[in-house]
Length: 89
Image (cartoon, rainbow, N blue to C red; front, side, top):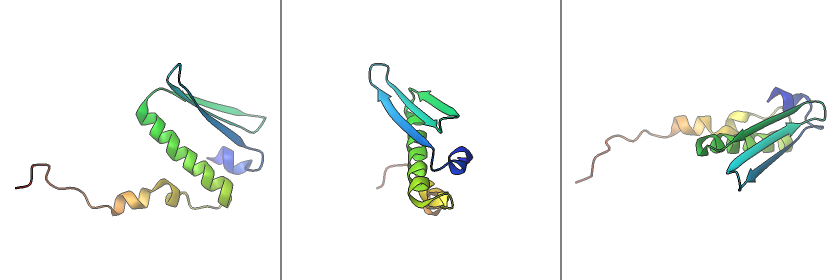
């Protein structure tokens, strides 16, 4: 995230899905450095979706945004845990 925060105005990213390969590709660049990540795992795709939401927040609100709001870490801690997995009678 520091890469994006340092060069926020010059940084851009592209996320695309290649149906023929079944891969999701994320590329972030500032014309000097290029970071690329590819995955075909659904669990990794969910992580990339969270990263996408963080990029949206940084680009819309600026580099001083509180990323805990975007990632939902506080919301997950506040949810009650489900007790008992059995059938209700």
